[in-house]
Image 1 (cartoon, helix red, strand yellow):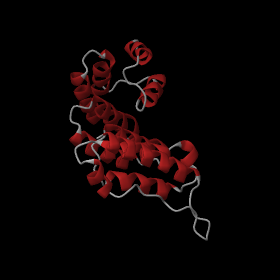
Image 2 (spheres, one colour):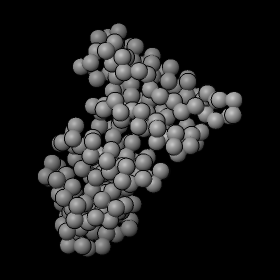
Image 3 (cartoon, rainbow, N blue to C red):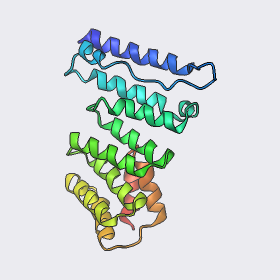
Image 4 (cartoon, one colour):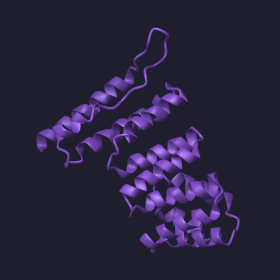
Length: 204
């Protein structure tokens, strides 16, 4: 097991070195990268979760703002697809992929489908439910559907009162403070349970 962990970290560091020098074709177009082949999962141990850790680090590195600037939108989408096709059991992969698809590539429908795929694997993930609710409410403008996702998230985390109240506002078709919307957006990849966000939202 220890050797498998060491191998995983070596692969991740190798990915960093490769990323720092993107490969180019003769026409100066950067080659769209792909993660290490799935046979690596067998090498690391199918049940260990180490391959998913590697995929998450690989994806995070390639989708960083500095690295993403080297790729076309089509390439970024293919990078995401190349990981999602492997159906990784790792929540953060679905959250990050949907965030990039929605906010950087402006593809909310595709982002929503990614989140649904993640939610099937993680039915008790309130973070995925929060993201699903955000996209339905503020990107696809389906308030009633968004309310369902936010209400489901509030049932999983009832101690975070603003989630349930947000669902109620959406059901009643009440306006959402733009500042609250911005804070919700910023929390999707950071911390939807931060005290600052909770205090802000509970005043609205």
